[in-house]
Amino acid sequence: MTMAPPPYLKRLLESAPPAANLDSSPVSMPPFVTTRREIPWPLPAEHLDTEACNVVRRLAAAGFETYLVGGCVRDLMFGLRPKDFDVVTSATPRDVKRVFRNCRIIGRRFRLAHVFFRDKIIEVATFRSNAPAASEPDIIGDETELLASDAIEAGEAFELHEAPEFVESLAAEEPKPADGLIIRDDNVFGTAEQDAVRRDFTINALFYDVERETIIDFVGGVHDVERKLLRTIGDPAIRMREDPIRMLRAIRLASRLGCRIDDSSWEAIERFHPEIMQAAAPRILEDILRMFRGGAIAPAFDMMLASGVLETLLPELFLHLRRETTQETAEEVEAMRQSLLVADAWTHSGRLLSDAVQLALLLAPIVLTKVYDQHGQHTSAPAVAMTGDIVRPIAMRLAISKRDSERIRQILLNLTKLGAKGRRRRGAAALARRNYFADTLELFELFSHATGEGEEDVARWRRRAEEGGGAEEKEEARRPRRRRGGRRRR
Image: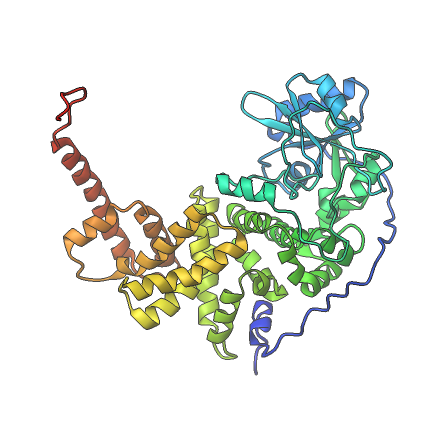
């Protein structure tokens, strides 16, 4: 009896996947039936952010309808600890600034108020509507504007990449024109019900009344939380194309929360995943990295592989896995999945990988196979050139910073050296002093845990790294120091 292949392998086993039907005919948003429900659901007080709750209470005391919203409410309902808290209110950004002196208005496409505290920022958004704008958005003429990321989706704050190249490229890059569905202006204020309907998923459209300890639900999100179902608000084909990053966000949230994506939303991802590349490249990269940071890259990889998203984001990896996969065996895919499972386990234990190591983990099967097959373990000039030729186009497509792309190249070039036997002690000590060695050893240890091999090599290199560091400090102490202010020779 022949067993059916796992869902994530079906696309690899197809000789020619069906082309996506990207119908660009104009469409209109169908009405979404809403019913306001207030469900008593006390969230644990010890997990609520004190400053965020104070912002809610002060705006409510000033006469504005104000709630906690989105990701923080969703995570607490799923029993997770939110990393940030967002507030939504009927107050305009200018009204918020009148209430809080420690406030700054930011954004163009999506104007927000940031309330500053000593060690954090509470993001306050005004209820939005999908209605066409009748007048100019609320703007303070002399207010210094910051460009809020297009990735800010009400209910879930967007984290800026720490590299300055990311911020610059994000500010410079606009979404590419598609068929008129991409939202370019989002400053039409509305009511709480209108704001809930315009959000992406039902579990992200829940408001929490701090004083009454009640969930305000317009779209059936509480029921979906109880069923662990990720469901799009409105027609998924339209909502996914309005902001193609929602396809990645759906996969990331479903993986992290342990949810199932409903059938119509999954079909929309399968059909329109090529449009993801119309989004700004830094946003795509950030969502991939957030899959790692959330400790859910392994299930996300399965979903990306099964839906075709991986074929769009990393066609090089997809084609490599297809070549290595047959009906009888899928060793390459299983090895990749096992490595990602180890990465998730490390994240949950508090051991965080750098961005370069995370991306090198995804690119390792492509680079190591080609370079090792042609050049073995030697980092000769052709091997260096080949590694650069593989990494460079991927880095350009995903807007990986020059610093990270160079670190990825060095990690992958030197990874095979760590398993080499009989390496000279002097050469090993020199390698252990390189600035990329710590990242290289971390990826090598991850692969060792995934395969169950090379544990002795990991321990040996750990010892050499410690010895190398001590030797370097002694050498620095022996060097004669140059005097300052001495006579200058003519």
